[in-house]
Length: 487
Image (cartoon, rainbow, N blue to C red; front, top):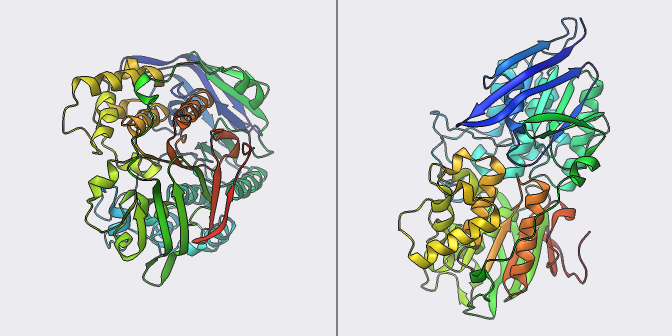
């Protein structure tokens, strides 16, 4: 029999909500699919059904090719990878990446790959070739705790490409990857498809491998086949909403100079991560920070946000004061709003959506102090703007990943800080949510906020960006003014 996946009358409920109601889908031999749709439509749930990770009602018929040398497996690669230490625990905290980089209880990349290869009887030499292709070979001795979000994504992709299953389902493969890495990955996807693996890619991005020949979107709890990605994107029109009044006020600046770094160097043993960084950010400036995965962006931001212990050993001025001149970390954080993939990893998702946003007033991971009446009204106004009012009292972890990210974006801006650090803020958001958030950023920019924005997708950036700094292997490759929108 030909290889085939046939889903008939699939029904799935999650926390009293209907996710699918009679969904049907046939994946025939030779077909490579793009599955798209709005955040929360059920894309990840469908992928987990295919991977055998969650149960459902209806018929699921998966036929493998018994004559193929490829493993008879549907491998699901999640968009969100939660690693554990050697004792099986995952109780890491946000700053641990910078304070315990050599933690002995966290496995190395090499160890992770050795274990995966032994489990599946794979050729170690093939992993080395893939690591080189993905620009990952220099990270073999790094612990999983040291990796950035983009590097974690590459590690999971490397393992999937190494295994070469008959079916490969990948949730948001391009998240956190720079343009060059995305192009390399698409070449590897095409090679994988040519070798016999059938791909199901979950993404809302248009930069796809040429092997993709089928398109579908989840809409109203059913799967609808479409003619291409352009048709999917055109169906969703962003909703116009007014910026909450409390965010229409300019930030209360304490200095005309927000950041000044002079010859900053950061090393971990023999590995130098940042080299002679000089950077000045004046109040009101909007910067785009870019660089390849592993170029040092996260480390640079950690120096500004007060999370990196080596900031005291360098000439760094924040908000007009030299770092280490008597201010506390909380004095710094009170002036900054931050969102990053790493912060999301370590956030307490058992807290409610309301509490998650309100915690931004106090810079806490979770809410340990009750907001006042005025602050509560501001949180509710922002939840309406972000389209999260209906989920106000729901646990953050019960929401789809995109809506979780929106709630944490609300946490970032709730106190209208002097400096916004937006590190890949739109990861996990659909096109409508991304457009809505960037319009929010542009509206805030009109009131004079200062911003550092990290984004790999040039087509999904706010229009207010004025300046750009590019890192390459820990050094400033380019710092320039921009006089028109980056396209």
